[in-house]
Length: 155
Image (cartoon, rainbow, N blue to C red; front, side):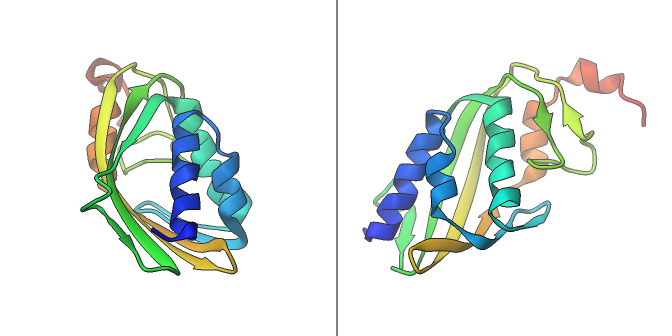
C-alpha cells in the first residue's frame, strides 16, 4: 500500500480511539467532503462531521478486509468497510448522518449499530482534497432509532 493510504489507515485507527486529530491533519484547507446527505467545504466543516460522530458513538470499530476491500491507486484510494459501535451520546444530524425523518438532534438510545460504507479519497500534495462517503443513511437511522421515543415525535 502507498504511504498516503497508510496515513489514511492510521487516521481511521485513531478515530477508533476517539482521536480526530490525525484525520484533521490529512485534510487540505479546501477539502470537499461529500456524503449522501450533504457536501461540506473546507477542513473545519468536514472535520465537524467526525467530531459529531465521536460525540455520539462509542466503541466504534472499522472492519476492513485489506485483501479484497481496498483499492490504492497512489493519488486516490477507496476503502469498503463495516463500521460498528454503540449510540451513546446525542447525535447532531445537521453535521452527521440524517434522513428526512431525523430531527436536528437525536437523543442517544444505547443501541448497537453496524453499517457498510465505502470511502473514496483523492490526494494532492500529501493532503486529502476530495473525500466521498457512500452508505445508506436510512439504514443507519433505522438502526439508531428507539421506536418508542420516535413514536412520540410530532409528524
